[in-house]
Image (cartoon, rainbow, N blue to C red; front, side, top):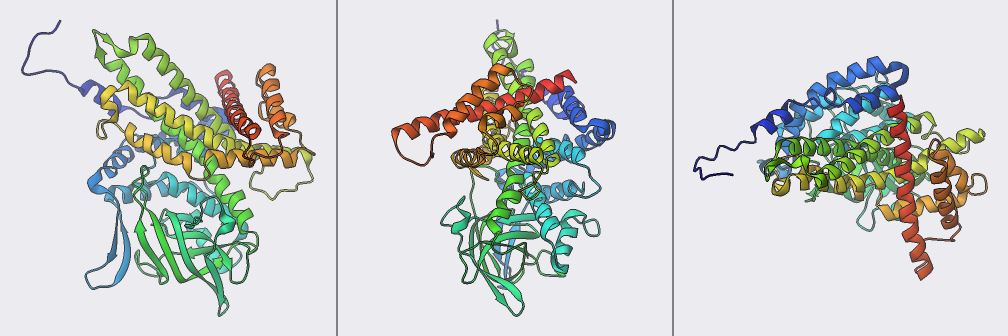
Length: 527
């Protein structure tokens, strides 16, 4: 029973004290177990590195991420300076600049950082959302991988050194500019032109989605003049010797106003003769950008989704322990308990699955050239590549669903932008669903891949390999369903039968991924 009191004593302070004093890693026993399990013999060293980074990610990096998301600090474009000179300066808040500098100084893609340490650190960084750091990290990872394979001249080798090992303590940021106005996933339809002039290459045309528009270097798809084949080129976006001065031939037309990842500058850009250096064969640009750049981006979306979900579920559970309604903690209500248990399990299996896939992808040689004479190695690489696509859309969509449910635990406070980070994470997660290939594109690609591989790798065997350790009945059911659906000629025919097949394919793809994640989580729990 409550009586009138004009000086309402209610305070959120106990919840805030708990939330703001939490260490992402030290306070998460399962995350510690996942990291140690996948680090193997290096567990002690990786655990120590994760603890050191978590103390930063859970405090000042968290605070910078929150501060930079406020509307008054939104990134903007300054096209001209006071002397009527075109500068195309992308202005970001000081918090974002500091965050990027500190995170990149970790040297996550350096030869000094092993895979397990990189994985653990990235998972903790992603718990702060996009924050203009998640996308720059994965774009830089893709650039490093491309350059490690194709840097064959002094200019490209210097770019590799700058993005991978740093230069005088400064680690460069990479980007990939692929999309043009006529289509996103249809990279072969690109028309941006590359012209060989005086022994070098120059680019002419526009790109419609240039995320990480503030980057130091960008990988750009373009067609050599007179060719219908797409090539890959790398461009330095800044003048040599200048501090963040745009290189000639690069113009930022405008910044896009996005629903999520709003701290990340995404621009429309025009290239008018900027100097570029080719990467790999000029007729293999699509194959190389898909197999390396997009594959790594999709792989990391799964890890980022796990980080987003982990943060959201943790804060929702903490709020449920604090908040009272009708004389009880809301976490004591059975329906809330069930909701939290479901969300927690989803976050945990997504995290375990992301770690398992990330580690397995690299160990399987997922970035190596196809056509290995080793049949077992070829199958492992195929499994990893298909799972990257399957995990990408499944984890991203479930992340959005889980964060939405987490916001509901907060009631009306859940949608208040400055009450918690959840609205920001929700928008960021929704963007992750669409970029690097939306669900329908990836599902259709997996269907085609399985059809092409059927002669040397039957679909039932693919499922059995991916779900090794799962319940036999589950494996049989998924294998039978996927084999039957792969036998359907195409997912592109607009007839009733194909529509039914597409619905079934959507459902079984999700079931495959979630079964894989459950296997990964059980492996951790048993370790």
